[in-house]
Structures are given as structure tokens and as C-alpha cells.
Image 1 (cartoon, rainbow, N blue to C red):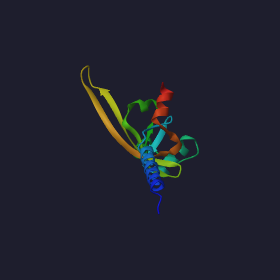
Image 2 (cartoon, rainbow, N blue to C red; image 1 turned 90 degrees about the vertical axis):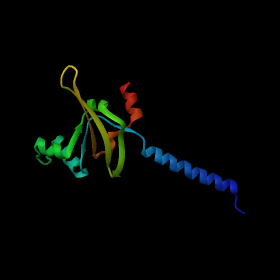
Image 3 (spheres, rainbow, N blue to C red; image 1 turned 90 degrees about the horizontal axis):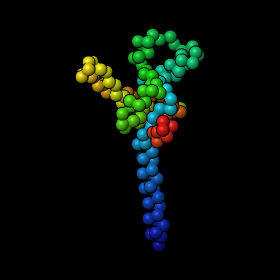
Image 4 (spheres, one colour; image 1 turned 30 degrees about the vertical axis):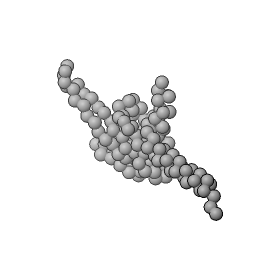
Amino acid sequence: MINVTRTRALIIAGLLVTCAAAARADEPFMFNGSTWVCDSPEHYDMVVARETGGGGAALSPKELAQICVQVRDKDQEDIMAPFVQRLEDNGDKVKVVFMLRGERRKGVLNRAVEQVQYRGWTAANKLQPRAEWLKIRN
């Protein structure tokens, strides 16, 4: 005879673990300081090597803008909900998606609001849970 109570407990435990993993995947993140977000992990490594003086490929600013965007620490205030979402892991790199809101004044009463969604790769250690980011800010 099968122990029904034990079977139910195992099923419930399995469901809780699955729900916890799903909640972790949907957890909002923010960047830990300034970072680059690039269209591929290889381009991210190249830009970081160039920035640290390691002799990365010489790219013009126009070429660099085609493959990467730099998110400075001050830009994080403009990241819109659902903030930085982690899409995929690839070793020490993660694929993220986030939306930045920019505003320009055209005149006293006129303004242009721009919302741009970015999707790309950055270092996994450059992400932190949004709750921790808020603690540091306050």
C-alpha cells in the first residue's frame, strides 16, 4: 500500500520548488554599476578588453554604437518596469532585456519622450536584484 500522505507531501514539495524557480526567473534586476550591453558575448568581451586597455579591436564610436550600448550608473533611474529581465545564461554572460525612457525638451511646453527597448549580453556579475539596488540607493 502506498503512503498517501508521503506522496502528497512529495508532490507539494515538487510544486513549491518549481514555483520558486519560476519566481527567481521573473525577479527584476538592475545593473551593478555601469556596464556594457552588446549584441553578442564576443562583442561584450571585445569592448571590455578595449576599455581596460587590453588591446581590443579598434572600433570607431559609430561602429561601437552599432553593436553595444553603455548603461551608466546614472542611467539606471530611467530604466522602466519590468526593469532588467534575465533571458538566458551563457557561462559568465547573461542575455538581458530592458527599456530606457528618455525625455528631451523641445520648448517650454513641448517635450519628446522616447522609450527604447534594448536586448543584449552583459556580464552575469553586473546584475543584482532590484531590491538590493533600492537598498543601496536609499
